[in-house]
Image 1: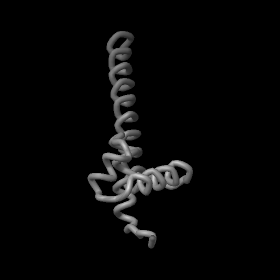
Image 2: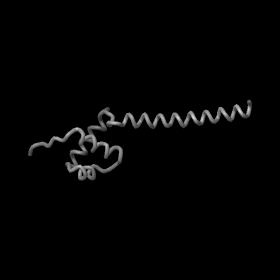
Image 3: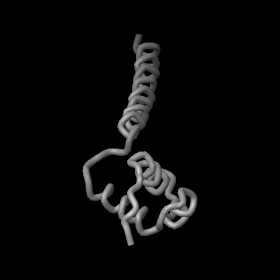
Image 4: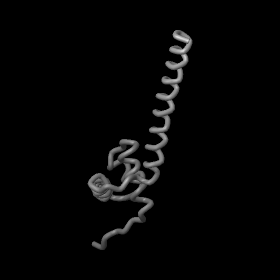
Length: 87
């Protein structure tokens, strides 16, 4: 049987569905009309590689920025209360 070659965009979408949305490989395979073992291989290769998902770096930076903003707001509030108390 001749091997089937899938576009990189399809592989990336399948990996995103499994890794980010926590869908089973069988469900992803049926939705994308590919073989289940192909999806499992793509996910396994992704997990053992050091490549981030497309857009994952942006999402991580956005989450980090939000955390820093929350910390900043807490420190500003604390500083305002200390200034009000000890003037």
